[in-house]
Length: 316
Ligand code: PMP
Image 1 (cartoon, protein in one colour):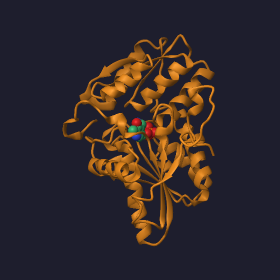
Image 2 (image 1 turned 120 degrees about the horizontal axis):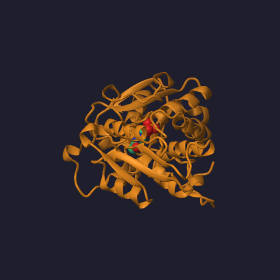
Image 3 (image 1 turned 90 degrees about the horizontal axis):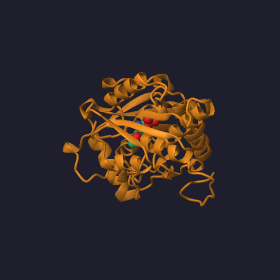
Image 4 (image 1 turned 135 degrees about the vertical axis):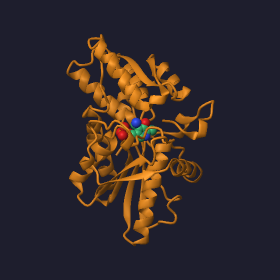
């Protein structure tokens, strides 16, 4: 298995650097649960710095292959940030124009990264959160369908398929049938749905757990509180076994612990997924079952550094 962080590779394009991210055993945070292996899959090792590189790349290459995306069109989509970075990166790599609709309160760093690749930004009402961005992009595309290619990550099956063919295959290559639990946060639900489908095909006793914030107003950027959101069309509750609801505080505290104890500075959705993974590990250890838990760490914490502090630490 090749690791983007661990080995030097000679690449023809940044596109070739997507995937094959490392699994890191979290033994320090896990010192009280030694009978259970807990791994973080480090998705920040992708060239755009997040798990969303996988979905964006597959949606773009498939659309370019069948003519839905051409150099005459502008790719437009709504994004909490990471998907936008990925579209921007691959737009620059493959020569496609990109426009992004996002709530105006996403961090300045996110806006600056997208702009650095030549992407046009269109802002939606921050009070309407990511649903407002979805509504705005849909109305723009409806008004001028010839101008835009709208990948619509919430409805595009290439989003979960990227994880079915990539993320899940890599996890199986790394830990094989030892895996007992898989944990990932829900945003579009591409990661949890696509990865769980493949893992369950290969190893029946596995349990797949989705992580969502306890409340609509939360600080776990990238995650959706499904009960109060538009449910993505690609969401498939039958693909995974259960949902764990995690508070902003627990997600943020685990992010802090991972930085200090494991030297892993992760975004808060990764903190929430790892927190959930250790809740499972504690139970398995207590019940003397052993186990192997893999949690997705979608991005790095420095993506959330901002010159201003979030009021009450909350974002939509
Ligand atoms: N964490 C972060 C930081 C994200 O940007 C996203 C994507 N919105 C997710 C988790 C959830 O990933 P997915 O869209 O595949 O459900």
